[in-house]
Image (cartoon, rainbow, N blue to C red; front, side, top):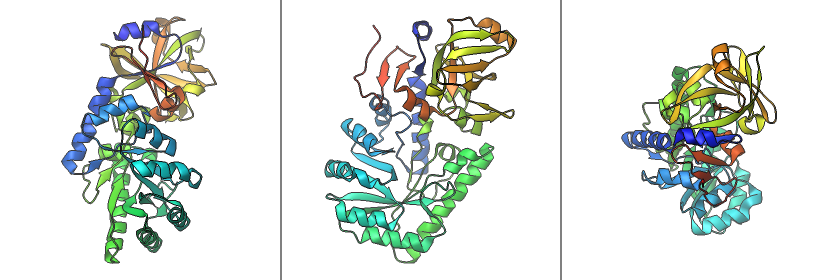
Length: 379
């Protein structure tokens, strides 16, 4: 069926291998079970009710999302325990109250003013996590500011309608590591920082709650989750070049690629001009041999994605154009009108940009919350 899918491609199309996605989910679930931690996967990567069902098949009951809108979408899809892992947006309080009335909902805070706002405006029991910064320096209270963390936790516990859940971090600085060893080191340091915060809270006779950590590279490469209660990776369902470059996955685990028609060729520069540019590949790049790369060609073999071609680089994108630099031998193999598969640097952003998938198994269209349209099938 895979070859027939490629023949039908007319424009940039996000292809997904559901069998690989299932295996990726099973591997992470088995690791969480072995480590006796709860897997609360982040659904911002796939953003699809249909793909969410693959998680439900493994017994997953609690999920993470990145916005109130995403929480609403997955609540409609039947998910009942939802964490919005983003600093609470005061302007969406009405929507938060509507969700909290029906579901087990939790939000994040990292400032006392947000706790005060919630305590004054919440109308239904609402879970609250304290966001801790362990190195990413994006949001959260720096983990060494333990007195401030303690004051925030106590403020939540003293608010009648708020339900304190615990401390949470996203060790996203693992993505800036230069090797799998460094990823593991950064993730372990982040974990130890969280355990130090927990110990401080307990020492001051304050219930510490749960410890939640989450980033795909760290969760994939760490071997020990002692002291952690739940993990929240998301990208592992598909993986991408960023994860591959960090050593968090192999070629055979990547479950998505963009099928791009070849629309022009430049013989002098050995460049294939693709219909697939910045709109599809977004802004993320990898530095390879001193140059930014937006994607790499991935082979199509035996009905699925094969080996990544490090010598076939998407080196430039404009709105619709993508410039793929390839060796002479590869250049001669492709003609205008052919289709090239390119795996993205960051699958989450590509999903957001594309809004739907086509499965390589049977050509099924799978929509995401970006479109929110019924699933269609190829005729």
